[in-house]
Image 1 (cartoon, rainbow, N blue to C red):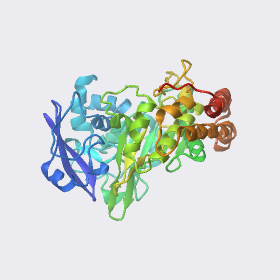
Image 2 (cartoon, one colour; image 1 turned 90 degrees about the vertical axis):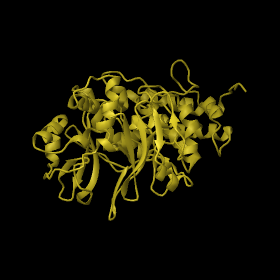
Image 3 (cartoon, rainbow, N blue to C red; image 1 turned 90 degrees about the horizontal axis):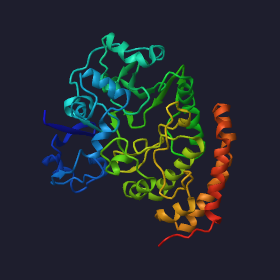
Image 4 (tube, helix red, strand yellow; image 1 turned 45 degrees about the vertical axis):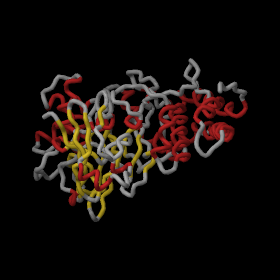
Length: 422
């Protein structure tokens, strides 16, 4: 197989939209261009950087949006074993061809889709909890179709599952749409140490802190016995069928076509306003997320943990928050992935310089500096907020000093004299 067909979901159906050749060329289908070129909505594109037209898109390496479709972490390892591959760059093409049939968002690779479903009664929720990271092997051994469950990224073991109307659970892609009630991501501890379990069980309280802090969030996360159940926000079950919302990572929007690249926040903030209908609102949301990441020690803040969601009506926005947890506790020591260009050697952002450098739309630099200073009071109240949301006390104690220092530097954004190069 030297080329793949990319499909997009809208209007209740999957449509063949483009082809990508292994050698590097991407082309939209002629019929698709004729139908969508005039409107050229972001939700109808394969990626933000690929306007709908008759051009041949040829770049060094893969189009960045395709990396959003590949499994990563334990999911990649499971697919590599399933396909009997060597886990290096040579595995990427077969993984794209055969594992990208059920990724988050509204895109998929046609060759990865299994056309016939297996009639299976599904599993009880307690079976997922009891089996934990071994659930998929258990499901496969019991005759269930499981391929779509591991079409997901991230270093923690996680599965994409769907719940039917009887409350039984199936792998993504294994259940007919008219039998589907809800879509879930189920997540397990990244490792076997107590710190790994502590990170996971505090992800739900962290999410509630973010909600109370004023950030965009979706439904409440449910934690039980080392299992975290997250209802997906890129799917909506309607009377007419399942709506799939477009979901593109900030790494893809920045045209980063390699995993692990460290992209500064400034680059994200420069490109984000052109991708959303409320540029200032989403830019401030993005910056406020990093303030909370710094305060609460979520160091795993790379460009694939933030995304733009593209709605069927053509609007787009920064997606609800996801993968927000006390990653500073991780035993492997995860460094803060994305940083500001205006940071001290110690890693402390110079918020006033950031306000000057971003030159945000719809807000003056002085107003932006005052906005930063205004966040200080909210940051100072985080220990009490964390306690009320159920964050464990030893985590709060470990973060107190960090929170106080952050509040101080935010307040300096308005009062400190900065000599900004012009």
